[in-house]
Amino acid sequence: MQEEILYSIRDLTVSYHTRAGDVVAVDDVTMDVMSGEILGLVGESGCGKSTLGKALLRLHTGLAEITSGELVFEGTDLMKLAPREMTNIRGAKLGMIFQDPMTSLNPVQRIVDHIKETILAHEAVSELVAEQRAGEIIELLGIRRERLDDYPHQMSGGMRQRVMISLALALHAELVVADEPTTSLDVIVEAKFLDLLKDLQEKFNLTILMITHNIGVVAEVADRVAVMYAGKIMEIGTVDEVFLKPKHPYTQGLLSSVPNIKLDDKDLYHMEGMPPNLLDPPKGCRFHPRCPYVMDKCRSQVPQLTVIEGRQKAACFLYEEVKAREVVNG
Image: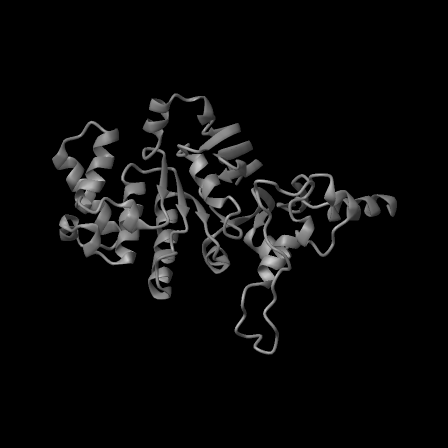
């Protein structure tokens, strides 16, 4: 069965206008999100993951600005929509689970009011109908209906995270951006949460962009994974392709840095150097100052995402050299 593109990101650039200068947090990113998949987005802190996720819903305000690019959702470029039109799409078709549910939920508002407000903002139904739907959604997520009258502080971290999911599901959103959804959860609750997310994906045919620095989470639930570094996508492919045969040197270093309790006789690997300052990023490939395979062209030219094998793409000149040798050798 042929896969269908739900959300197409083309040449997206997002900048933060600061007193020190413009910080380009997302730089010329192009990728597709396929209908019904869980796409993991991984990378070190500060690489632009959350900025990219918020851009998909055009949530940036203040210092942040989408300076160029196209955001095509179901055939419509969201960048061409008026703010009012965009408001109608958020919640109804695009949902978001924020990093910390305790700070995302209104502390003086009951849980039922959070969900009712979401429904009533988009649908012409009575408060009674909205409250009934709130109860159905919350029970679907494993929370007793009577807990709707609780306030956020009366719930555990895992329950608050489920409430955030209920807000994304209240209007049957087609794409949910989950920004570090397991950060505040212990390992047991995290495992239950990931099982729930998979169940919901299958039940509602949800499409999920899972933003995380936890590679183990991506390995467990994602279908594909995109690796981000210093505002750029370095590699993208299926989980098996990227995790079993990583192509980009940054991906290789990232995976090698994950502790493995089965290899207690080996030293923990760490990548040399630090991520670049995005106020003044290096020319050429962003990773070249830390790359063990750096070539002269890496210092001056920007590699583009190209197909390496199967569905796997990488932005690295190493594979241009390999392909050139393959052509010469016949």
